[in-house]
Image (cartoon, rainbow, N blue to C red; front, side, top):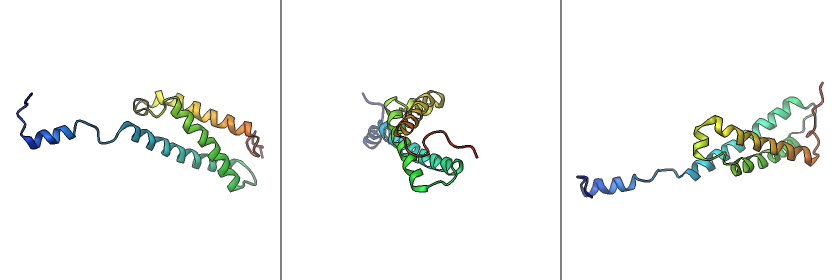
Length: 119
């Protein structure tokens, strides 16, 4: 089937048939970015809410929550390209993953994982 393209144009068109980034690369970048944002947000939330905050322990708690939230979100399909483009569809998977991470943190019984004291 000839579309009137010369040989060089046909080769360029053949290479452009595939996307430059595979969907798995986009999903991996989204998961890494979400993990980093979760760790930072959780660390700063603990810093603001807990009197006598210990930075190293706060980092471990944040890593525990993010370490569970990101894989659970991935298992629920939260990093599929269609869900990344439609924000409201991906929110359910992201919130479920974050909830699972928080439940694991509370079940671990780490200090500061329960109800925060009101000062």
